[in-house]
Length: 219
Length: 219
DNA sequence: GGGAATATTCCC
DNA sequence: GGGAATATTCCC
Image (cartoon, each protein chain N blue to C red):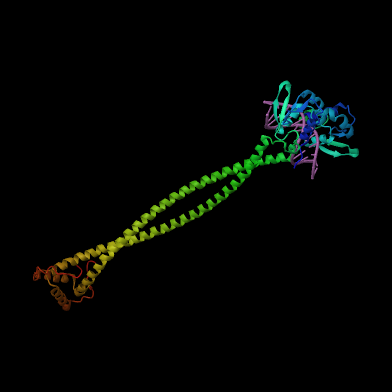
């Protein structure tokens, strides 16, 4: 796997060497205690760390995820899940923890991913809308054609009706005229009536070319 | 205004003190030269800076925007717009420059804000479009219903017209029948013809209740 | 205890 | 020369 960070490696070596009284493992080896912070700062810090301030080491340990417990006499106890006596192979797991501000950046990145997703959806919806709009336009065009057709047919019907009305007016006159004639023949049986008409046909009349044909009112 | 950064202040003091031969202002006081880097690292670095490596100082100066020029014998000359001999009041303007990556991050943040704004607008527009389209669809549906109604009524009218036409056909037969009768009266003057018909009317005929009225073909 | 600015180191 | 990881300091 990875290599332990230099800070962690140094710290472990200091503890394992047992050269210093100011720092030691706890009895179960799952934590260590800085027994004498002043001594530690004076004799160890300059040699093993960049800083001269022990507070910097605390800050470092904190940023690596160590839990700190304050004991009597300004002593501090630190523990970390993967910083255990004898467990060298897990030291590399002791890593700097991302600060909240960086985690926040990550969140922003996530939000970009989400936004991209939303953007994609928006685009799809837009495309749907556009294609729907196309089909709507087609429907409207069809309706427009149908309406034109309807209008033409209505016009035709109106014209026809007008024509019919005019003819019918004339026919009405005709019908009225003949109705009165039918009255005359009422009561006559068909054969008799036919006979009379035939007789009349044979009679003929005075041909007056200048005044013929006889003008009926409906003509 | 602001205070000069500790690094800048220290550097300026080192130069002004003229205690060290390894570093000095240029003649015009607009730059300084590290005349002896090794000596500088040995005697000045530990006292004035955290680091023991002169390279770290170079890195620092670089990040503060100093221009570096390499001279003979590994000497370096540094200059900065606001780092000038005697010009203490402008020292605070010598500031860390944001790295490109950070400036880039800022830009990204801005673009995210803009994108969010645009996204919001897009969503609103899309919603508007969707609701508009819905109302358009409703309108089309209504028009479709109206058209169906119109078509049905036109059909009704057409049927009616057909019926009328059929009746007219029968009427035509009637007309043909009477036309032949008119032929009979042709030649008669109107008064004479009327007279004949009146005479016929007065005659009357055998009333046969079971067979009356006389059945004309068109009835 | 931890955010944030600054410094240092490492590395290309 | 400068990006990026790590360390240190400062400060709330």
